[in-house]
Structure formats: C-alpha cells, structure tokens
Image (cartoon, rainbow, N blue to C red; front, side, top):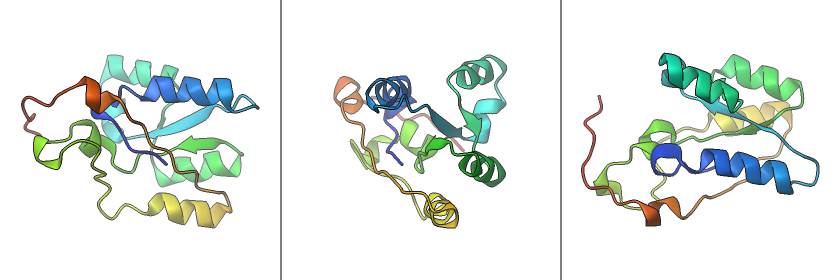
Length: 130
C-alpha cells in the first residue's frame, strides 16, 4: 500500500524497482480506478503495465492466486491533489478495503512511500474535477 505522487509518475519506477530488487522478481499487480479503463489509449498503456481494474472481485481473485498487489488508497485524489492539501498529503479518506482484503486472505500489508515527484513539480493551478 502506497501513496500516489502527482500525476502518478512514480508508478513505472516503483514497479521496476520492486521487480529488480525484490530478490525474487516480484511483479506487482496494480489495482486501478475504473476511469483508467474508460479511455481507449490510456487503457492499453495501463494494461501493458499490468494494471487491473480495482474491483473487490479482481482483488480477491489475484490474492487467491498468490499475486502481490500495489494499492493506492488515495487514487485519483492524490494524483490530482489540489494545492490546498500541500505536498505528500495522504488523501485516503476512510478507504480501508485493502486492510479488510489482507485480513480476509491472510496476506501482509507492506507500507511504502514514494518521495521526490512533489519536489520536481509545483502545483500552479488546480484542475476542476467533479
């Protein structure tokens, strides 16, 4: 479970880092928001990175089959973080489904944090969403 950086620029680097340095070539399956699968070209890109629609059913199926998951409880809220929240704010609200799934399947939660992207980028304007 991890924080999302601005524009999700950390995702490919995190996936590659875990693959290269985990000792057993762990491929993380990332659970993605449904919006990723509604945009045709974007859908192909995220699928190439192993992103799976973040439904409870998909989560259960992946865990049952022994996959390691990368979960971003902050999702799009963190990717498109408004200026008022400042750098590195966790915007997870009350999202605890990942913890319930881990308990249900007896798998550990490995906390991770990504840093650096928010030092590279400054939010100059908020994108009106919703």
